[in-house]
Length: 410
Image (cartoon, rainbow, N blue to C red; front, side, top):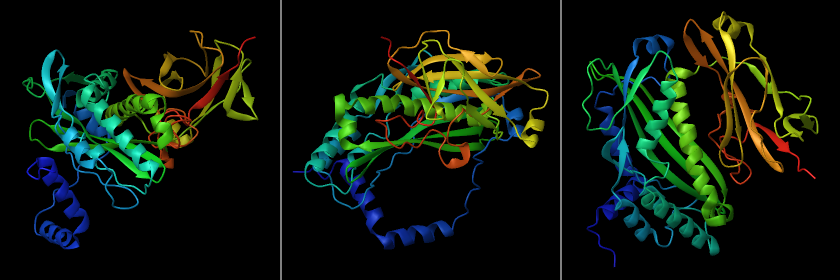
């Protein structure tokens, strides 16, 4: 028997009403038209704005949670009530931000209880199993990556690498110090599980909002999403190993994207592609897929800037950041590398396939800006490493990096 007095039940009914009642939606639209609409905050940080704000306090906060109902038709997954109750009852988890204990709510736990999809028979049981595993994992693992504080920490360290910015990471209860120019609010807003027949798509959404302290004006607001997909069978294999890896890559991408868009990145179009070397040969004449017998291979790349882009960075020294990933995590990095090639200094493992990438780092007059990471898909293609095709083949973040197969040794 369902206790209809529970808050989650009322929330669920409200969500259902919003989705099914055209009259309600029309009334809401009419209500909005009678009120002044606030101007939309910029979603891009101009160089002028970057130069006016340098002292920033980063605060992890609770985002706006809402029930997410997605899929091909509107039938509840069996066990929905228990999943929602379990998720919404979690509340918050204790963490420490800068040695200051603070409860960081997990606002999206209820979302994964709301699963709708074109599912029948055994697929229903698989969806419910995946939903339950996600809920249990997010509620039980205090150190799990998808928390507001964890994401805020990544953004903090990203901004720490910008010479012109002085970031501080505080708990929400810590007084803002004098001299602070702006507050950067970081929140994970929702995590949705969208089931389309036998495929499950998991999406994590987060928001960064920069507010000027003097007048509380919103200077910048950006929503960042990270999405990956695969079959239900693959998500559930090996005790949901792909889900555990997904959490890490989602946080990795979102944290990097927020800090890059705020201050780090200079979006210059460029030709940036891998090239063969003496110990890396192309596979089937495709330079994006290399093969080597060396455990310390030499990576190389071609880089060209169009004339218009070159003039914007004229006089800058171009150095390079390099990263190598295995199927589940980063395993090697090198920073500020001169030239267009680099020999790996730590041996890789034989009989494994890695993904590698580089990005230009422009240094001029004590300032530094970074370009895009090298990917087979251009940044303006609709995916910048945040929309996956099949997580069991490669995670969204690394799927378009160059691949490097290390041959097995006899």
